[in-house]
Length: 461
Image 1 (spheres, rainbow, N blue to C red):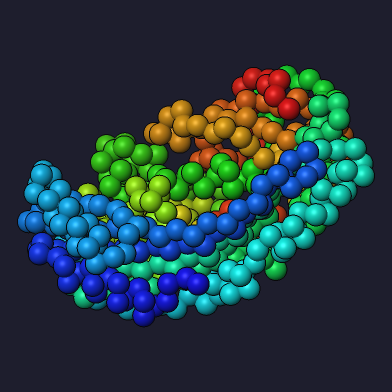
Image 2: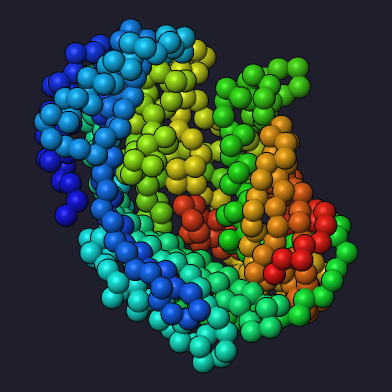
């Protein structure tokens, strides 16, 4: 049973009552995670874990100390609060300190939590992965994969009277299929807020078909090609462009969106007019949290957490809102954290990552392929790393199915490539989009893109 709203409020109020610091902020993340791992066409691991992370941040003047614990006894909580206050006394003053937020009115996010998914266990997950395993065994293929369902209860509060509570569920599934000769590999993923939204069978069939089709790939020379990036490939690469939508980095000349000589490139048409991107935490296809920013649900993730106090005065825990980032290729907005917004005299805004949506067109992936005279079909990318933050230049590898397209049809598999490309260039060179769908934590279309730069061959399958 996850922590209820009343239980979270009682616990946070108790922790705050122990505080002697000028400011005290508390976040609680409780998670219930069940997973199922399979390999060589057999279930190998099943597990379930319940975890809680309580993060306490105390501030004296502009000096802040933070500590995390998962103990809830009165003695342990008192000790944790005292330790955070001791750490604050050792910390250096924060020149960019900004006071924590006061009481907020957080919106309801319909559909973010599904009780049936929170209760789902091995029976439901085994039923999901079973068809892919059986089909692979029947065809002499080898499958491996992972499915995880997570249910979270999250709460925040501080001495200024702010309190927020939210629940959410998520399901993530991925499957890899290999052929007996070791030359063919297919992969697929599926995500959803609830178990019933995840089409396990379709993902399994997709990975199987890709594996069979990709056997004995031909060698192709590196260079620039028109590509059809399937939804997963788009998700793995393109959203990284929104790391440049940080107002401070842009205004200080440290980003792709910095204008030469000063200022930002807001208002400039930098991308294809087909590109419109926005954030909508309320979209039922991918509902997000009622506030901006994350709350760690496990102690290992506490580093993700920060309050709207020191450390750059993040926009965290302000109520979620819809934002428009790109309209018809024109940059419309940048993200301002609380400190930078105060310094510039503008309202703070959330980052693009929460509820990101790239609009698409009314086409299927098959339509994108049919429209391509000569190009490459990319299943997904792997091992992506930054090369140059100023241009958002990335490098990575194709994986689990790369195919030549000739005269509107998939003609034959080709060997994988290493690529060097910027997602900003990808968005500028878009020629056609598919209908968008949820993939990862975003809603994105597949893309047909010209002049994608493949730099060298890779022997990896």
